[in-house]
Length: 188
Image 1 (cartoon, one colour):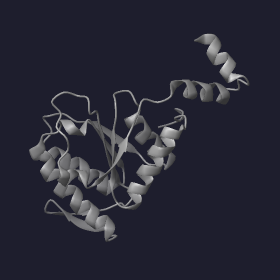
Image 2 (cartoon, rainbow, N blue to C red):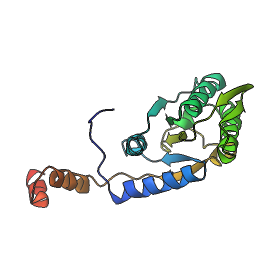
Image 3 (cartoon, rainbow, N blue to C red):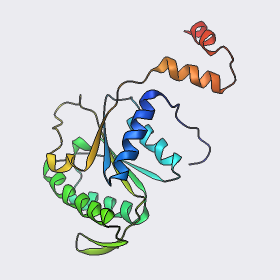
């Protein structure tokens, strides 16, 4: 929050933004897959900031259970926040099968434009600004692929390593350097 800058918009960033906003319009989440350090989580947080929404980032572990994830997801639904579950493929497959039914309940309520709906035996409010996003690093060892029952709720986005040179040039231009390419090459 606050004045902490924005991401540089590159063709990769634009593609991710477009895919995620299309997913939201269909009441789906986004599943960003790519190498560590590619900016998956930061891109989701920056898009949330562009919409004026709060994004809660949760680093997933093997120890996460259905109760914990259910409380997080219901909280997102009630508050209209975005949730970014980083390393979602670390969560145990048995937990993911329950999470898929929880996400299905929320998606059904969003599709039907409900303001209140049944979630895990309780009647809760629903703010339709909410969004659920997951990130995954496919190169991590011993990380299984997501089950199909979960995949159907997320629009996939492949994230590649960003073009650092282009980002540096844009940052220099934005800071007032008229010859950003010349300055960039002088310092490398």
